[in-house]
Amino acid sequence: MMASSSSKKISVKCSDGMVLEVDETLVNASPTMKCLVEEKCGESNIVITLPNISSKILSKIIEFLKVDLESDATFNDVGVQSVDVDSKAPESLTSFNNLKLEFIKFDANTLLYLVTATHYLKIEKIYHLGCVEAVRRIRENAAK
Amino acid sequence: MSLRSIVRELKEMRDGIGSTSKRGAESKRRLSRTKSYVAPDVLVTPSELIQQGQWANLPSELLLDIIRRVEESETSWPARAVVVFCASVCKSWRSITKEIVKTPEQCGRITFPISLKQPGPRDSPIQCFIRRNKETSTYLLYFGLVPSENDSNKLLLAAKRIRRATGTDFVISLAADDFSRASSKYVGKLRSNFLGTKFTIHDSQPPHDAAFQQNCQSSRRFHSKQVSPRVPACSYIVSTVSYELNVLCTRGPRKMQCVMNSIPVSAIQEGGNAPTPTSFPQLFDEPFFPSPAIKKKVPITDLSSASYSEQPVLNQGSIEPLALKNKAPRWHEQLQCWCLNFKGRVSVASVKNFQLVAAVDPSHNISAEEQERVILQFGKIGKDIFTMDYCYPLSTFQAFAICLSSFDTKPACE
Image 1: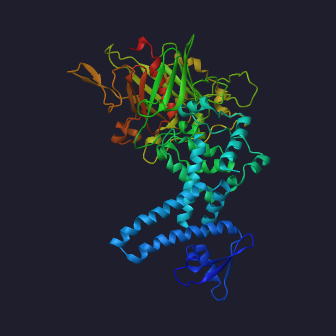
Image 2: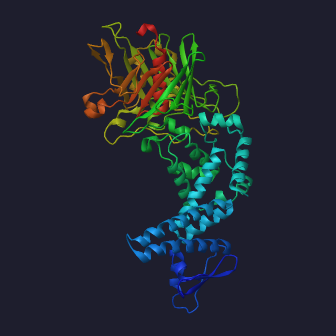
Image 3: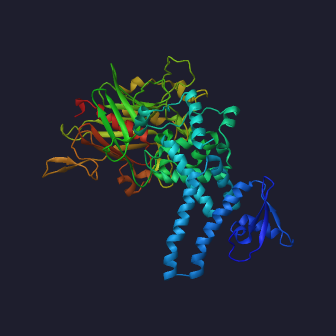
């Protein structure tokens, strides 16, 4: 909703038939989706299809991507070592930790779909968080 | 359905088939001290697969990544039980976990029961300790430098001494409370002659390398009370240990020699490898009989009378077995005692203490460094507590069995 600039929107069709309008910057965060878009570069109104990902899961992923990119943006804008970076740093860390906490709340199936989807979409950071949470749950179960 | 409930269902299914997992406060205490088994290789039926839910059917690439992360996250016991847990969730998890887990030789970690029969790491020894219980005649082998305060050490193997008319047997098992030879936890045994000067180590499974089955004779088939096909019907002599008293000095250190029938000398030569079994014998298969050995039928009880060089084992086949000997201690003039450098792992003087190195001659082409390397070290650190450090090419089972022989040698030897 809070697009920093008037970036292009890409229509993404999910497995349940729903079509989500996603910012191009977010779409490009996934090498898989980016590739799908590039294949259709000639078309005026691009629609890419993700037959194995539901709209529920995709919207969750987009939500996380937004948080992630916003925290990254503060680093990108400013550069190496400056007062501004320091003041922004704790914020980005908190948002990353918040993401981690979000995963703990998911039920087993949602976690499974998220991990599979981010693996397919090649979104490293979120895939990694999902795996970490899966491992944590396996350890918890083994201990019982 | 939560992951927890899926997993609990799977566990219940396993319990029904007859595994060792239990729930409740009692099991929690046991679990922290005891082994975690890989459930026996039971084929999963289609209805069970459906119940396992989607976590079992993850794309293998994904499953590989997750299980690999689990394996890397817990390298030491008791937390490493989670890796064994992954192998027992379902068939697909099991095959991937087994693919990921490396042998002790490669990574220095013990994971599954079969790790106990695989050679140890080459560079640094695996350090364990043995706790003796004189009242029950049991010996428990734990992983770890010394007993921990909270008693949470990982039990690797257990042995019970059984005295017979013609000698002593040490039955070796995966469980401290089950020494039945018909049990699936039976791993092997150590048998002594009457005088306690010669011992044979019997493995419940044939040596991994087919070429070595020439060197290991099968013993008589013992008849178990069960009709179940799960009984190991044969035992294979994988090593012989012999002690000789020091003729020059009655109070001097004894001489020890081990012939490892299942390990070739080439294992310690450059580029050599020791046999590495990858699984326990299939429970539902016919037991394997190495046919030449059966026809020869040399009974083991003859070992007490036969001298060492007459054993047909050494002449059979063209592969020379590895021999180990104990490192001779130095006489310390000032302290007036025999000394060996145990690198701090042994603190109490005892005739039982020893270090084994390879016994080779120049034709074997073994480097001086390799000849000096201590392959097995055993010694006392307290009342009924002993340390055992071993490395390649011995396995935990072989090392433990050799150490057990040290407990049994009679005064005739001292």
